[in-house]
Length: 463
Length: 101
Image (cartoon, rainbow over all chains, first blue to last red; front, top):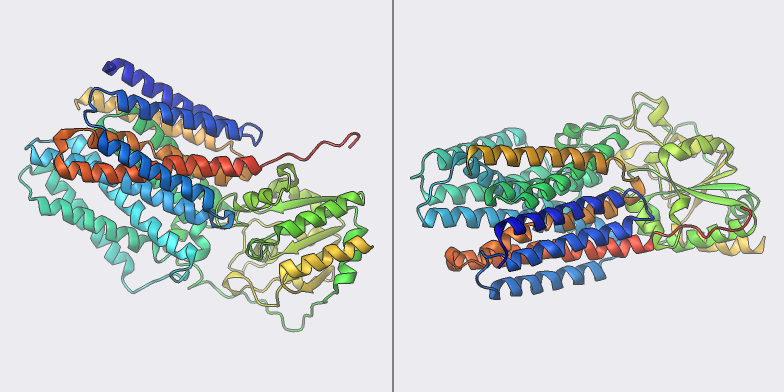
C-alpha cells in the first residue's frame, strides 16, 4: 500500500525515535519520556510493516500481536521488582528465540524453493541461528539460577572447555557445509540449531549465581546482535540499527559490572568463581566484635547529623526498604541527612538496588553512586550497613591474598561510627572474613533486617 | 544482496554500535535496570521480520507457525519491555525541594 522508499524512510524515523529515547535515558528526569518516545518508534515500525505491500494475510499476525502483547503486559504488571533480573533474563531469552525463528524460517523457505543464498546472507542466517539459540537456552539457565529452581552454584565437569571448543568446531563445520555446498542435506541445518541450543546451556552452567548480573547483561547484548544478524538476512536497516544499539548497550553494562567486581569478562565466563577462590590468610582469631542494642543504635542514629546507609541485597530479600524509608524521614525530621551509597553490584542486576529503593519512595537524588559518595564517608557520623558484606570489606584495599583484593569498595570504614546490621557472623560470598566487623568503630546489630529496622524506627521516634 | 548492499549494511551496523556505546556510556548507574528492560523492548524489533514471514503466504504452514511464535516472543519483549520500564521509571522521583535547604 505504501511504496518501498516511503517504507524505508518510515523505518528510519522509527530508528531515530529509538536513538532519541536512549538519549533521554541519560537523566532520570527525562527517562520516562524517552521510553515513551522509543515505544512510539516501535508502534510506527509495526504499523509500517502492516501497511507494507509484502504483507498479504493478517490473521496470524493479529493473533501473534495480541497473544504476545497480552503476555508481555501481564508480565510487566505482575512482576515483583525483586524479580526484575528474572524478567530481563526471560525477555533476553524470548528475544533470542524470536531471531532464531525468523532466521530459520528464512532458511527453510529458501531451501524449499530451491533458492541459493549468497555467502553473506547464508553466513548471517547461521550467525543469527547460533546467537539466537545461545541467547535462548543461555537465558533459560540464567533464569533458572536466578529463580533458584536450579542450583546457583557453578556446574563444572572435566574437559568442559574441550567439549565447548569441539561443539563450536562442529557448528562452524556444519555452517560452512551449508554455506558452500548448496546440496547439503536439511539435517545439517537441524543439527546446527540443536547444537547451538546445547552450547547455550553449556556456556552458562559453569557461571555461579553471584555472577548472573554480568551474564544477563551479556545475554542482553547477544539478543541485540541476534536481531542485527536477522536484519542482515531480511535486509532491514531498522533491525540492524536497533540490534546494534542493544548489542553495544549490553556489552557496556557487562564491562561496568566486571570492573565493579575487579574481574575480567573471561574470568567471569570461564573462571567458575567460588569454586577455586583462594582463601585469605587473615582469620578472625584473636579478634572480637562488639555487639550493640537497638536502644544504643537508635541513639547514635537519632543524634547523627549525617547518616549514610549501605544497602545490600539482604535488605531487598527481607523487603525492608519501606522501614528504611521511615527511618530516613525520622532522621530528616530531626534535622539530619540520610543518603544511600549504592555499589554497582549491590543488587542482582545493574541498577537493581536503585529500583528497589525507588519503589520504597526514596528519591533518586538520595541514591549516590560509589565514586561520588566515597569521599563523603569521612565526614559522616554514622554509616549504617544493612545486609551488605563484600562491598564494604576493607580487605579489598589492604589484603593482597584476599579473593576480592582490588575490587572497588564503599569506604564505610572511614565513617566516624559504623553500625552493621546482620543476621549472624557468617562470612559473605566466597567465605571471606570482613575486617570491618572487627573495627573498633563498628557496632554489630544482630537480627533480621526488617524486624530490627522496625524496632529501630520505633525507638528513634521515642528519642 | 549484492556487494555494495552488504557494505552499506556493515557500515550501518558499525556506526550504530559506536552510537549506542557513546549513548549508553552516559546513562547513570541509577537507570541501568530500566536501560536493560528498555533495551529488551527495542530488541523486540524482530517483530518486523516475524510479521514479514507470518504475513506472507509463500512461506507455507511451517512459515505461519514459526512466524506466529516469533511474533509472540517479539511482542512479549516489545510490550513487556516498554510497560515494565515505564512502571519502574514512574517510581523514580526527585526529593521535594524544601525552601532554604
